[in-house]
Image (tube, rainbow, N blue to C red; front, top):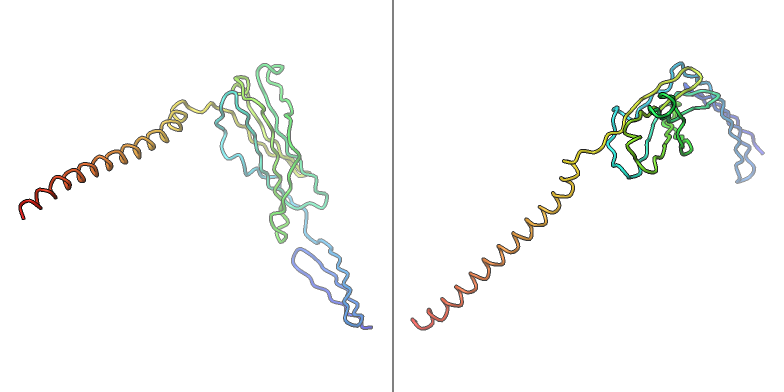
Length: 201
């Protein structure tokens, strides 16, 4: 039996590797010790970008908040959606119903994580249009927030969504009818001209 010890060090991570070789089998034990420093920055909200979102009255709508967190040994990110409306005790904020947080590691070298939190609105009403929605993100360093309002999609855009496919269909149908009519005219002229040519020869 032979013993092999190797140590590899990167800017962010110290890796100890101990391998014991027994005949043709290799047994490897790997332990990772992080040497990255905790972030000194509060979380950064990367979505939503603007302060308005278009919705349809009577339809469901999901509010999504995407936040970038730096590395922390004790990683306990907080991402929440809050709603504030005039009918809710003079504008007091209320925590919304949300799905579980989704955590995704962006880069093992940079030790950054992206957390996504989604809140559901089962049916958009006028009350939602009169309210404001705030995504609040927090870690042990600090917090950040983004506030948006819901706006009703314009009637013009809805009409365009309906009219454009209909106009395209009518154009294609009209083009097909025109080609068919011209083809019939050419066929009729050919049938008239062919007997006349045969009698003159």
